[in-house]
Length: 322
Image 1 (cartoon, one colour):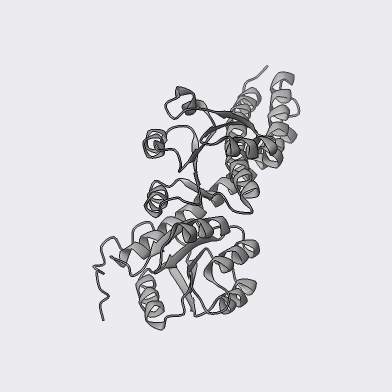
Image 2 (spheres, rainbow, N blue to C red):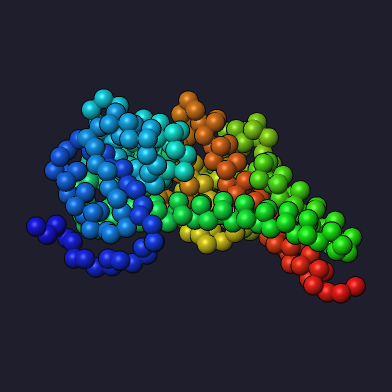
């Protein structure tokens, strides 16, 4: 039987050569059946459906999954707790939360637990589920490509240093220096400039965590030169600012207060902003962790660019006769 809203449009696009594994958790058999049949139409997806968080955890202990899609309200352990535990067991796992009763509190809780996307049911269009899973797989693939590229670059540098012992000393020293810098960035690359558009409390939390932080107004041109910009939902201009910074240099984190409007949070998710809930007991930990992760990624990217340049110079020095 054909599923409602399912046209087959776009099938086969973006498929990889290896199957990706999706763990689907919902205690409503009808919803589970529809979601399984929709995703099963994707030839490169292997879908494992279960009806409870406890069943999901059993599978997570023995199998690797790429994406977890779970309902928020489950018998026994809830979906938020499941995401947190699943991410602890498999840190590379992408998680998507489904709920019939969306609220600001539930969105914040899901993202704090490690979810990267959110779906409200009943779905207006069942293809939304497929699109969300595809987007989650692409995010995971990008992280894997970055990690594997980092390992390969370090390996190339080590091999070149060993093979090019007779290279000119300046090129040799430059490559050794950038390799050390790169390895240090991988271990400790969480330095950078952080700008906050919001309350003094957020500034204090980040400074207490030893970040270099400046508080700026939403119209400041300095925001575009920051590495990470933290914007609070309490600022009436956050929408305009987020759109202005979209696609620019800084990573943008939306800091959602306890009174954040649900529509604001869903808009932030649509804009692919990093979302952090504030006003919670663990807020002093969650915000610095998110900022540290973003700065580390940027630091590694910069170090990788410098190491690439040093590798090219070193190769040229070997190829060019003295």
